[in-house]
Length: 413
Image (cartoon, rainbow, N blue to C red; front, side):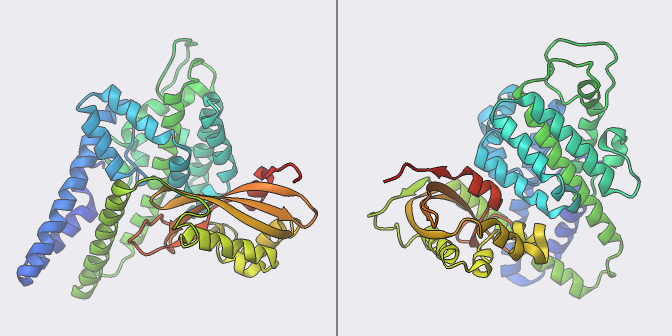
């Protein structure tokens, strides 16, 4: 079954039941319950309004979409679906934002094996090679779905009802199952007119020819993230079926976890909304005291001293998740061929609430001098971006070999 509204999600209904218990705990409990109820209503209204406006255009609300951004898009569009679609595509067509949306894909084993292809599709997307983005992501989705289930069938071979997502916003009746009807729609006659839907079968089989546009390419990224949510929902449903019987202690634990998650999301949305771009240069008051300066200085010092163990500890959790126990060996193999003699930190661009870039000059032992950009994200132990005041730590986000290959040589002094 699909959900008629976000209010029909099992977690939403369960939280509503828990709030009824909380209201029995006196004035403080009633006030907290009222506050959480308001947040729940706002969340459900946002999801339902998104689907009401954009569901028929086959856009899917997935977990990596910012509630704050979606609310802003809906308010600006003011009921105009074409305008909302344009604003949503602009939201995706931001290199740093899309990179952050794609980060959680690393948590899925079957997707980690395909991340090099996803990254190539992302590069093609920002180079306006939309035809390539579409084909690569279609192959990634087919292969991912084929591997993630015991029954080996790609996404194109699935019926819409097979893609219902338990307790997930992609499981909305205008979500993944609804969009999948056009995904697999057959096209026998050759069509040269422009299309703006992700017609997988027609595109792959060569009967639809004019799909090289940003709309179809962006929908491919939107569908990729929705399919990832579907895979997570499947696993969550299996865990739910094997859960312990409901007791007062388990309800209390769930209540605490739910409150914490809602509070963190609200604080993160508030921090993102209030965020302003900032750049720090040598000589400015906050340059050397900025956490990004301190983390970069520590990382480059470890590199200079060939302390690869401590250097590894400053990498994003996603890198650790990808390589497991071999992560230190991977870091050593990546950095050891490029011994660092000295370095200079030139600028800090704190361009997102939970992300920033540091520009540094690296002097290598063999006399080569390069300019490099180090991308950092402030994250928690689950690799979720967390702006201040949420608890988190700045960690480096990059593939070492890509980072080293992209460093720009500087002319000799």
